[in-house]
Amino acid sequence: MKILPSICPACNSQLKVKSLICEQCQTEIQGQYELPPLAKLSPNNQAFILEFIKASGSLKQMAKLLKLSYPTVRNRLDEIIERLKLAEKPNENNGKENL
Amino acid sequence: MNEISTNIKTTPNNRLRQWLFNPFRVVAGYKALLSGLAIILISALVGSLGNTHFDGVLDVHTGTEAPLWLFFAEGLINWICMVVPLFSFGLIVSRSSFRVIDVLGTQALARGPYLIAALVMLPDANRRFSIYVMSKLTQTASTATINYIDMLVFALAMIMTILVAVWMVALMYRAYCISCNIKGAKAIITFIVSLIGAEVLSKFAILRLAV
Image (cartoon, rainbow over all chains, first blue to last red; front, side, top):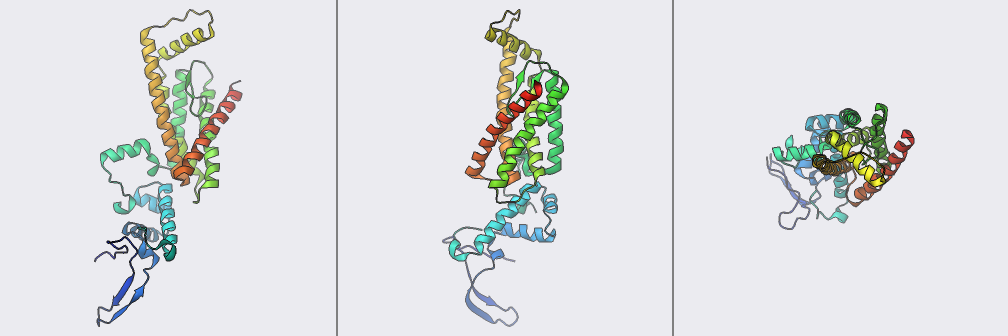
């Protein structure tokens, strides 16, 4: 499956969803939709969050899984939380930063 | 899994650099605390064999004979004196929550390079040269003589000690940044203030203990 891009390759701005399509009946909905905050994160950070949820939100387990120390993993999570907070403020951020 | 863990390619060169200058990326908490404490105590033991005193967070001095417990106490005081201000600054400056065990563990492990300082100060040439210099400085009547080999050994030990001191400070800084999640100017300023404070505090504490 292709990776959903969230940043414009031309100007580095935040992309929005313009159309959605039903694979079954080909119904297409057009509009301008915001990407959900998690989808605005980089694929690397999305993968981290996915693994974190699978680990029941246990930083200790994540540290074991990634072979990193507990504070390194916690700092990474804090960084992602900061990015998510930025992603929730689309007007202030305006998507200029690669999350 | 590796792609989410790190953006740094794990070449043998990078791995070596990480282990030398930022082991806290992979080691913290109890593991770091136990290995760090072991290193502090071994350094004190080796120091006692060559009468090398760590009488301050950054200090390495040779010369005075003392009971073994004093060497151990010096090591532990230096470590705690560094942890207290860093932890306090962490509480004030950091926007993250962090564990005291990580600050304790990483700061203990960061003192690892001083084991090398204790080892390079072991040769008796260092003690002989120190006695000679002290007798010259205080202009006391002494039979202390010096030869070029002693001087060379002492010079090499000094160079090594300066290098490991720089290495230790770099490790203590990285340990602080990772364990308290502080970066940039805030980290640099609070670390320097902590280091100066810890140096004064440890000097005072060890002096009180030794008297």
